[in-house]
Image: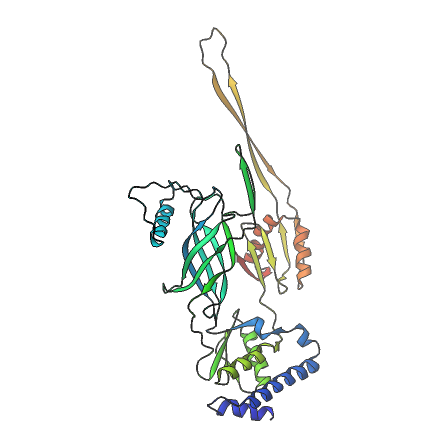
Length: 391
């Protein structure tokens, strides 16, 4: 069967095709990829797989959350006088287990902590499957190390129970304190329970609607969407079309097993991507500056100087003479010093390559914190040819 006959079968047949048709189709896909790699030379080596660029519409994980108790702590649990919900939860748990406490009983728990349990329910998860959970203290517990999570139902956004969590908490930190001194390594109030939850309810996940499957690019880009559609059409002529700059619609077989195998073949196709848009990312909290290879710089001149203001206080005591009948008072002598570093005017030549841009910015001799202001000024002057994003 040639590619044209496969296209006809894919477009015309309303029922799942026999296995021989699917195998033939996959051989066609493999042959096209192999021949394309030979014809394009290095283009397949620098390309990206479709599975790394897109996600299938409707195939998504779901977030789960639950409230529970951690037992067996070594005296590092919640202080019950400040976290009354821990005592209420503990009392309610005992009543469900058949133990009723006398009214007015005051519990002083040290080995129990109230926690929030979170997990991600992956797509196509089935009852009985195990998933990891994260346990986070919500009270004033000092540490969850050595604790055991008691049976906790995990609910979704619809308030339905989708998993049950229980197990020993694994922490990556350690700590000790005595006589007012304290040593701590990493975080002690959040841990993980590997395979700590069992799925109790599955979420229906559909692979496409009717004859079509929508592929969603991770980032909106019309050129990349066109490249993905063109790559699929080379393998299966006429199967893909662009809906917009993010979604590519693909005609796929109707049978579930045929459709899964068809998508598996598409995901391994290589796509030659276009250059990303020029972008500079600035983290104002840490002073980090990251730019991609498309950033360029127009000819400009930059002068940058540091202005520092130093305020120092000298606290002294004014002691009057013995016969002066005065009072001893404290005196604060403040001194202010202003220092301005010399900022020379630096000529920045036009730079078309990222390495030239880095050399030009290093020539200014500015610190990463100074670069935040310089890049913003260059962008305002129209000399920085890139999108400036502050996170």
